[in-house]
Length: 470
Image (cartoon, one colour):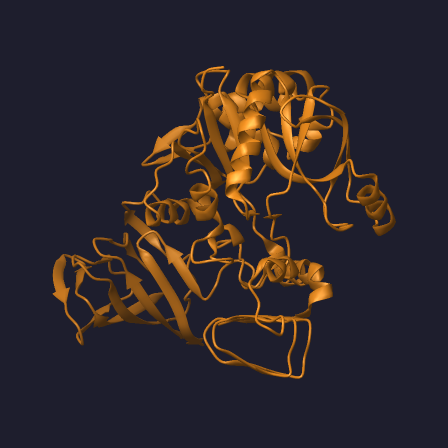
């Protein structure tokens, strides 16, 4: 058989609420370096290196994450085929349909991956994927099942039937997340596997399955892609057409109804990092079973996970805890109770608080800002502008701004004037004045911004020009 073309599709649309407070809506877990120095998304891309037949990946992400995704790709010196922007989430089935429709050759094998999985044995993973490609080329809808080593209740399961070629088995059925007794029964049976959420099939086979089982969704995806626009390096899906797509996973839409489903069992050190206890599981721990990230000290403490963002965290005589400290939120939980972090997350969101949306340090395509202090009538931010980057030409109706340059050189537009502000110098932007901040230098521009006014919300921005299309 000639070399099969594999088109990797990386789904990067989740919010990772169970890993709050590190994971936020605007900076979700796949954008974080949780296991090593690279982020989960970067690890997923790097994992494709050396995979036989693999083309450039296509990434599907939330529109709000577009610049984060692009910057993370750049950081690891990789290229992608395209970055497809969803105006809002519609689960996995429509996202994969968009990718399948995007393919010119219906015989192209799609490799559908989540952006937030850990794979310990990459070489073995490649061997399973190459086997999956061969089965997909024969017309099968392939999924990958993780061989369980304990009766976990947090995963759906796949029951395998009769054997096929390349180490695969016909899918007997998909099973919802079981209770403990059922999970133990599945473990003992030996032919049940955790549903990994990774799939392979040809573009034509998936579209044929949608035509049979989800024709309305397929038509909505056709309309969505036909109305899409290209913006810089991004493919923007049409919001009105995409809204007609049902919010449904590939499991419900296709895999549970298909008669040509095949599962390939694998043991590759997989973990979906669905909770803080999962992260503790895959971490390299000290002699007392602790995993410490950041500035942490402990006495008589065992089997804890601690992530200290910016200050010293001290533990005395405590075991089996998860402690995650960020500048605006602190989580303390027992490792056996971390699945309930999502309950706290939902409660914070229902109270219309901002701690689920973003960190105190907020990333923008031009750099970032950190809200250092705020009270009635004022706010102080530390702003970093990347070399060569520029904020939009804008004005504010309700606030004035004072800028003090700490390092680098700022090019400032204020009204009709354009001038330079150097280190230890400052300037003032009156209320209602058009202004822009740029970094013409080779090093990051750092400055302190002091805002004053009756309203200091981020929505008090009127943009006139913006190189980032916002």
